[in-house]
Image (cartoon, rainbow, N blue to C red; front, side, top):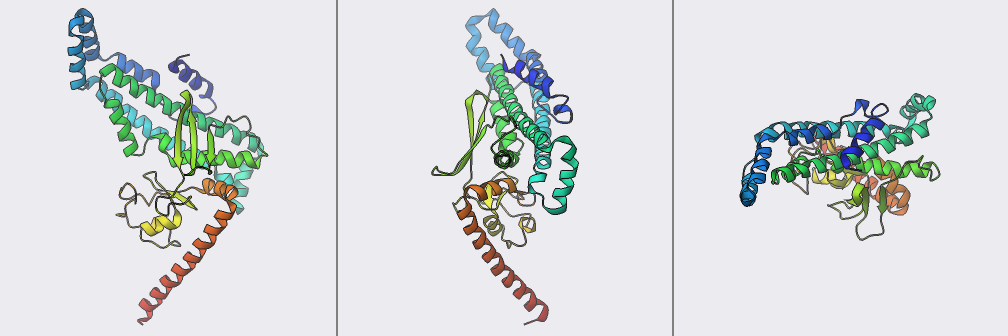
Length: 332
């Protein structure tokens, strides 16, 4: 079965239960946009009439862009990519609330779900979110590949790079790592029963570098490195900056020149990511609580050691901070 048919079947299956309030890649319509490209059709017709000039026409198509496709295709695809990333992050955030909340928040969330078979509903939502991310990512990859094939250009590849630079690619979202960690935590809390979820994530801490792997359709693998780029150790109390890079909280605070107890939101807006040097990435940093919970279970001794070290450093920084504040207020 071709991917277009598979994607259409997926949409029809999940439209009522899940996709009704979510955005998705308009794969079928975007294919029609490519087919309706008059300029490329004229080039194709000319090449059929004169096979001797096929190489020359192919070169011509590579040198110039297509105004019809460029205006309709890329503008709509960018909007869809932005909407998909926003929809995915909000749904994952809502899904993991019950796991990460405590006290009254956890009780209220439980009451909201208690009449809908919480475990079964959570398992179904998790499975649908995994499929949602993978199917839209594959649809995006295939439609961009088709664009380059039709036009004999590399504009589709450049557009994909642009999406990554603007943090709109769903497979680069830190919420996808959180979803993978959530699945493993949820599976373990239910005695190894995944509720029918086919897990495409697996976790390997025995390798030289700790990684989380996501297996996409067509056996494509994506690896997410869980090593902090500052301390070069397995991340502890991890935060993902808005550029997508993952750090320990204490390391990120140090890079942003703020104290641990102040948090990353206290960082100067001009502070840069230590890896990519992008500005303004700390204010919307994502606290990877599910990933931290997973690491706590799998690397308990390491986690306890890092927790004690972070607490000691936090106390030390707090004493220095309040000592300076006292001297400033008192005057000596």
